Image 1 (cartoon, rainbow, N blue to C red):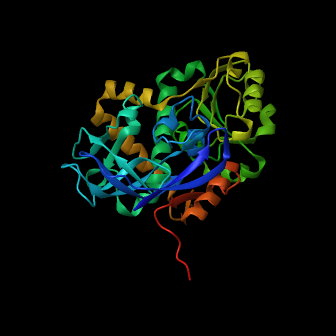
Image 2 (cartoon, helix red, strand yellow):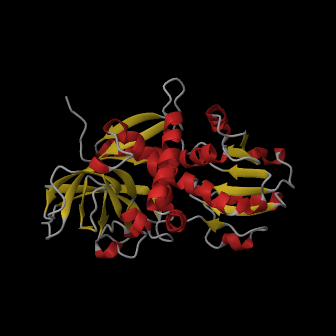
Image 3 (cartoon, rainbow, N blue to C red):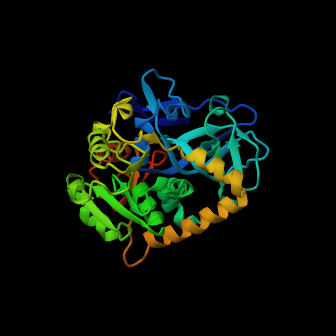
Length: 373
C-alpha cells in the first residue's frame, strides 16, 4: 500500500505536487490511519503562510527540502494497529497531514482522547496533538462530520478570540468597535457571532466589495464595510483590530487612521499575496500588532476553569453557532465534496486565491478517487 501526500513549496504556496510513497512497516505502539476526509479553508492557508514562524511545517515533515505538508482537520479510520489500546476500525477526529493516510504513535489514552507521542511533535502545542475518539466524543455525530471538519477548529479559535478580548476588558475599547478583516471567512464570522452577544461593542466587518452582501446577510455584523470605506468610521473611535487577512496595506491604513486603536490582533493570512512583511509591525503607529496564539488562551482558561467547565462552555457555544450556521431555511454554509488528486489540486488553488463562494465549505478526500466511466 502507498500513501499520497499533497506537497507545497514553502516559498511559493501556489506551487504544489503530489507524492506517493510505499507505506513503511509499523513499529510497536504505532497505528496507521486512512484519512477519509478533511476540510480545506483559508485557515489552512494561514498554516502555510505562517508555517515557519509558527512551526506548522514541523507537524508533518515532508522529508524534502523546501517542500511542506499543510496540516488539516478531519476524520480518519484506523486501518492497522500495533497498539493494544487502539483497535482497527476506530474513528478519530483531529489534526492530520494533507494526505491519504498517516502513522500515529498514541500516548496517554483516555476513553475520549489519545495524544500523539512522536518525538518530533513533543515540543509542539499539545492542543494539536490530541485526537478525539469519536465513539466517546460529546460533540460527535456521524451526520455532522463535514461541519465538524469545517467549523470546529475555526470556531474554537473564534470563541477564544472573543474570550481573550473580554478577559482583557476589550483593552479599554468598550464602548467602541471591533474591526474584523476578511469578514467573509469562517473564523471571522464565528468571532463576530460571539462578539455580537457582548454589550457595548459594535462589530464591524471589513471585506471586499464582492462579499459585502454575503457578510451583511449573516446578521452577525452590526455594520459591513468594503476595505475602501474605512473613512465611514470616525477616526477617534475607540477600537480593536482583529486581522484575519494579514494584508499589510490594510493594517497600515487602520493603524494610521484610528487614534484610539487599543489593540491589534493578528489571527491569519488569507491575503497571501499582500501579507505584511516580517518586522513591519514595529514601524506601525499605535499598539504593536500581536499574533494571537489560541493554545495559550486554552491553557490559561483550562487552568482557571478546569477541563470539564472549559468543555461545557465551549460545547454550549458550539451548539448555538452550528445551529445558526446550518439553519434549514437560511443556512450560512453549503458543503461540497472533492475526491481524488486532481480535484484536491483544483480546490486548493481556489482557496489559495481567495476567490471562492464564501457560502461554500470544501471537504476533500485524497484516499478516494472519483469514479470513472
